[in-house]
Length: 325
Image (cartoon, rainbow, N blue to C red; front, top):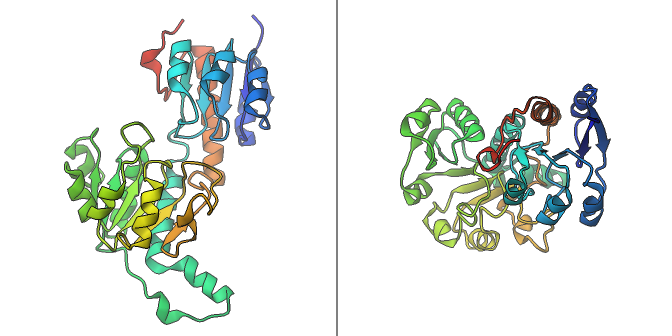
């Protein structure tokens, strides 16, 4: 048979592209500038596609992908891929959860330290010519309680680092055991309200699903400590963004650190919490380190090679729903 055709549809580290090109069985095309309509016309010949978060593999796009066998997401979240349609069409979807976990965990702590010590605000005040030393009296992380919502790979890395900061760690996760949580130094709580009311910091590390959408909304903000800080580096939509604005303005909570939005790119006119003084925001930087991008790129390339050449599907999210032929 001819070569497998691979489409790299989003920006990928050159190391990942080079790894694909090492295989003589592959013909690699890089096309990262396309509209949905252009992608529909482009995708039919390809056997595999690598995406990050920009390209949306909708049902319409997938229906046009006549030869598509596998999709690799260079990252962890896959809400930009219609997995149900992939499963119906026999397309395997793989992710690269180990590639960017450390980068996300470290950004979590960057957020907590910034919130605790007002680093960003203090810097801005100095840029504006002020010396507001007395204004920026902070707090310490030591002795505070960190609540981790979702104790998977990233949550476990966050827990490990929190222990090093002498924080108390609690977790809420329906899919792990207390014994597993204790291995990471965390106390697993079964009651969500108790989890919310106990934590000084709440860090979110769950995917966006029908179960987690709007998981943090007005009733949850009412339960949280008025000094607490919520951190979302997972997916926009898990925290109800309109309710977040109200909670921040009315000081229901102490603050928020937000890296992800329900619509990206995000602008203050659509997400007014961006301009609030008790909210720190970044433009979806969770996985944006040189090391993480190389890792997810090379892992995605390796996943594609294993899938097409060996019929192995590491980190597949819909393997049980697809009949492999």
